[in-house]
Length: 218
Image (cartoon, rainbow, N blue to C red; front, side):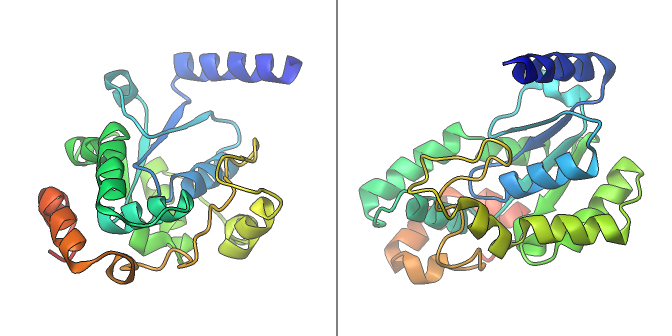
């Protein structure tokens, strides 16, 4: 209880002094991974991770993760252990709308925003470190890089979540859920194997602007 109170006080102080970092992105876009990396790189700052973005967050540095929405939706369906029926896909489209997917487009060019593309960092943490160094004008030395990568690579996350029975369970320290790593291990373009041709066309039409802006296959 005392630890929770102290944490709440620190977060409030960091917001008042400008030391807060916002980590934002749609579900299944690497948000939890980047949240943990930010916490370890900047242990003296508060990191707030969420799937929504507020106007008052604009005064804080914001690290945004984004991913091909078709892969994000496929991954989301897998985490719920569902089959990709048309009804389930409609539910996912609604869920992603509520969880910030269009805000990514709106804030992508803001000066306080660093954009991190999932496909570029999922198997290359140095991409994240290099981008953070430039954005925050900080040095992330090799020993720290190696330790963080060891702590949060796919085998490490699988170990953290191995005792959990479902996605409903969560590790309080890292925020990783049960079944956090799907069978495709985050491999890009998995949606092509998982969704039907008709479903792919349907989703590409919904997200056509998103796919175009972020240079995904149309």
